[in-house]
Amino acid sequence: MRLLIPGCGGFIGSHFVERMLARDGVTVVGWDGETAKISHLLNHPRLVMRQRLLKGPMAYAAFEEDVASCDWIINLAAICNPSQYNTEPLRTIYANFIDGYPIVELASKYKKPLIHYSTSEVYGRTLASYVADAAYESADLYVMDAERTPMVMGPIQSQRWTYATAKQLLERLIYAYHKETGLAFAIVRPFNFFGPRMDYLPGIEGEGKPRVLAMFVAAVLRNEPMLLVDGGRARRTITSIHDAIDALVAIVDRPAQALNHFYNIGNPANEVSMRELAEGVRRAFARVSGDDRYLDHPIQEISGRDFYGEGYEDCDRRVLDISAEQARLAWTPHRGLDELLDETVRYYWQKYGARTTLRAAG
Ligand code: UGA
Image (cartoon, rainbow, N blue to C red; front, side, top):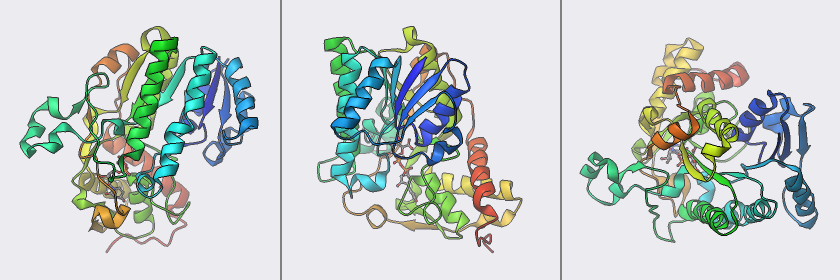
């Protein structure tokens, strides 16, 4: 089996490629400008790595040859960092829609099944958030079903939604190709996958504002307060990267059942507010380091505008229905929040804990 994977060098790609290369008979043809997260795999005899961006006629010609000879295309290429959606909206739209367009066209032209990684953010805000608080008692207004729930975005000036709308349009393009040309597809919407090799740790592995867990872990390692945007009221459903990879593997293993559907991939049992997540990170550091002073690591509130700049608007809550996914993929996520936080914190603790000037609070 030959898998063509644009974006193979990111967080999800690194775990998926690792898992697939462990199987005999699987060859991965990877496209990515960045390979740091897969450096441990680069010498694997069944990884054909194209360390380049999919830009320009020469790259497209080479990519087309790879499409012609592959069995599956799994598109993981994206910008998925909320701090860029309102500050670099053009780049966000290009990376998440325009750059994806030729991949969809080629999948259709060569009749290759396409697994496309989209986002849980395509739902936008919940319907419940636009009515009274009490509406959260009505599951119909907030639980996200991959093939039924409407998508609700804010106004154009709230540029947070550039990402969600670009991703949504690419989903619609794929579905249109499916209906008009017979393109076989699966669309995966990740619900906050966490694990080792997430994003980058700001101030340690790069500069900027990655997603929340990388922010919190870096803050603890650097002995700075964890910053809670808008009081940490937003809620997310947290998913272990390993449970997520199980689902992606199941799609490849069960094409007859899995293709031509949309998938919420996440663990509904792990819903937390961002304040609860920060508290969970404190506990994970205390467990992993054996030092209870981490239980008091400082937390500081900041407004969404001060943290992300103008045009930021938050998704209030992401609770997913996975009953159809469980049936089609014979898959159930089972890793709990403490387990996945411990694994992630342990990874960074072993990598950086001893080298930082860190002193636990107190
Ligand atoms: C992001 C992407 O936009 C989605 O495409 C992706 O599916 C999702 O991550 C994911 O990881 O699956 P989001 O959950 O909003 O969406 O991204 P985060 O940056 O992880 O933010 C989560 C929440 O934490 C937000 O409410 C944010 O305001 C808050 N936050 C973030 C903090 O309180 N402190 C921080 O330092 C960073």
